[in-house]
Image (tube, rainbow, N blue to C red; front, top):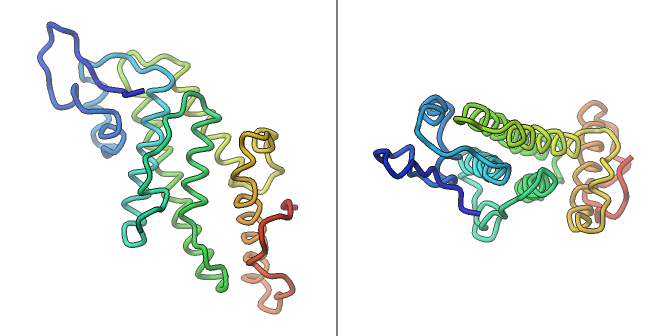
Length: 210
């Protein structure tokens, strides 16, 4: 779905009222008030989620610009989610694609992971701000962004995985998600106990995280 800010036929056009959603999503939080005041159509759930993905994508591009290479998640055309589960899947895919692949150095891996996670989190918060202040935004659209945030942070947390991530349609990400959780757990142990080196951080991701 292409989400555009389309003014009524009798209203004059302005840059804020004609920019596509991917551009709106990439704007800084300083432009939120302008977006809210512009004469634009209300958002639906799919439009709000598209802004969410665009904001996170833009944040990653800024935070990881030096590391962008052809073929990464940043370089791919993002999916257009229709519900919070699909949006959370897309954001988690982007996160797992951009965290460091080399886990031989626990401090370096942890630092890279923290930078990517911070970019993801800030992008989600910016998107929530944009969507919340959109003119005549329905509660369902705002709730969809909030639900996506909950699902994503749950996947990135330490608690047992939400059953959503165990569904067959999401299992494509399972090995990477399991490996990420295992690496993070082992890295934390190594950072707090220099003598801890009994497990490899470079496992194949087949083991379910504890």
